[in-house]
Image 1 (cartoon, one colour):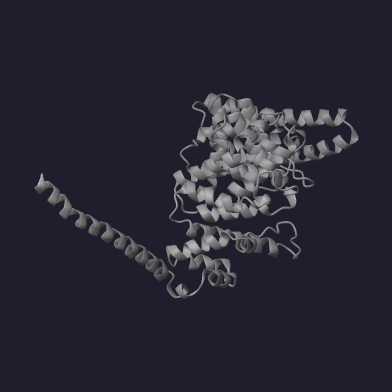
Image 2 (cartoon, one colour):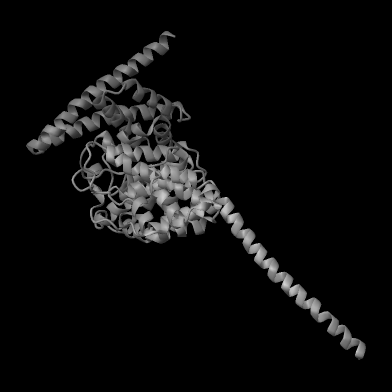
Length: 451
């Protein structure tokens, strides 16, 4: 027993010594940590934090962005500066409406500022996980009302969403697809975008005009317009469309890229079904279709894109065939041929023949080369497997020219004066289109015989 007591007694001083050693070691580590932190500040270590923040006031956003890469400690000090009232007031510009300089010089300056700010945030939050980065950035930007889905009372005159889009594009440039998926999901949760889209696609076209406009502006300005690489634009457009059935995809495509009123920016739903439209009304839709077809994104097959065009041509009701033809021409040769070949394969030769007539009409009106329409018809002929099918198709084309001319004549005879003038002009173009179309067919025939 005595031996055990003595052993215990002799161990006590050693235990005290070890505790004392740990305490001194902890103090030493703290000092080392502080020393390393100061060391990481370089020549700024002699400055109080307040003076460091004063220096930042004299640097441009690009310079602050470069400075943030010096060390993790400097980057943290810059993050702290951004969070201060003076820092946020200086960096988070909110003058999105009072753009008084001539032209678009001030617009460009504000957009360039947010491009630089996006790069600053990209560098400052580099070491954070994607989810934490997004939460932090949202916390900082939350005070800018014009960055919110419904935050601005005059969205058509506001540059806020465009600046937000420029900021996000710079922030996420170079991120992999998984991270970009997280960004999209974060924005959808933040804005309740899916529910808003559900409201417009299940409502009668035009019943939710203000919401349609908000969705268009958010999708275009925040998610789509600022990308320089087509593959990036296609990725974000796919995220918008793919969660929905094809019929809803067509509706959303029309809302985001279809024609709008120059007065209030709202979607014009009757444009395609009432009268022939111009190139500017269809260019956005055609560019979006080409984007999905040409960039080779795995979620979109050629059949998907052709089905989307088919659905689009009945939004909100069946389009005039001339507008269909104009959209196909603007979409490019490959899409136009694939669309028409699909009709040929499915036996829809009557529709196909009428479409050929209106392709010729658009070529005549817009002074495009008529031999393009003839060569397109020639390519489509090769889809048919037998001579009988080819001859039947060509007969349908000739009949379609005659029928459409007769329909226009009947409309002139029975219509009012204003309608007569418009249809008569259309008839004039169609007769010339028929003559030029057949002239090109004759040239093609004679040249093939002579060779």
